[in-house]
Amino acid sequence: MLKVNNINAFYGDVQILFDITLEVKQGEIVTLLGSNGAGKTTTVRAITNINPVRTGEIYFDGERIDALQSHAIAGRKLAVVPEGRHLFPNMTVKDNLLMGAYSISDKKAINEALEEVVQLLPRLKERFGQLAGTLSGGEQQMCAIGRAMMIRPKFIILDEPSLGLAPVIIDQIVDTLEMLRDREKTTILLIEQNAKLALEISDRAYVLENGRVVLQGNSSDLLASEDIQKAYLGI
Ligand code: ATP
Image 1 (cartoon, rainbow, N blue to C red):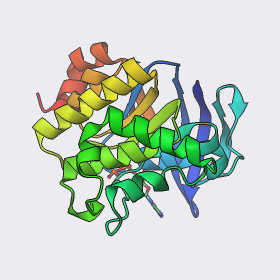
Image 2: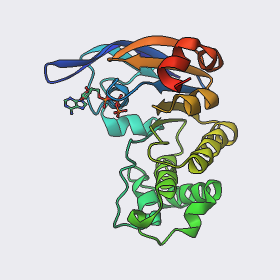
Image 3: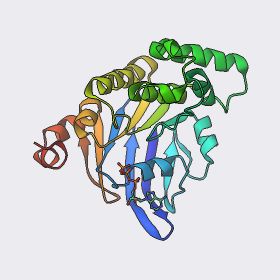
Image 4: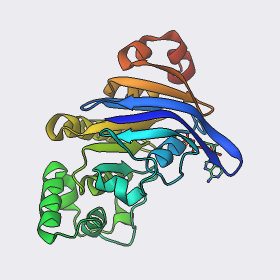
């Protein structure tokens, strides 16, 4: 469904990504793991063309998308939950969700999407009129996921959804991702530093170091690998 072929990306003259190749097939949860500064967010920004790649190709559903504008990529039903959530703190939960539908002009479709999102994430309905800036960290993450779901995505990229959250809240996020995959049939690319969480929930994984893919494989194999345990799981 998503194919990233040999992409190279730069900030100015500084090369950040080196020949990154990865694939996410329909129905999978794939994780991209790496420590601080490995290039995970830069990869997301390359896929969504916020930071265009210099060389390489990106395909979504068979269509080449690396020259499309970011809003056109969203129009293909590829949604992103960015690192840090980027909610509008002085707007209500409802208005933040509606911002996710800015590219949709049909009011009926927007209301249907809103209804579906709050059915899937009922906690958001309870908080509908609350300012997003006053939500707990976990509720903010749910709101950011809900906002991404407003376009009824086929594919969601989540950039470090567990960051700064307590383990019990992370469990809720994991349940939400599994629900998206199983009930909504959403394909997921999960960007994480939390290797244990990411490997437990995903089907396959890529490990990024200094802008390069250094390991890839089935998540269960990686979880059992001594190298991964030493480098990422502190075992
Ligand atoms: P983290 O988990 O800490 O968010 P990451 O794996 O997502 O890390 P990136 O944010 O992709 O890493 O950063 C990769 C490298 O690119 C880092 O060395 C970072 O300093 C550099 N970088 C990121 N954004 C910019 C920018 N706007 N200008 C210049 N360099 C940048």
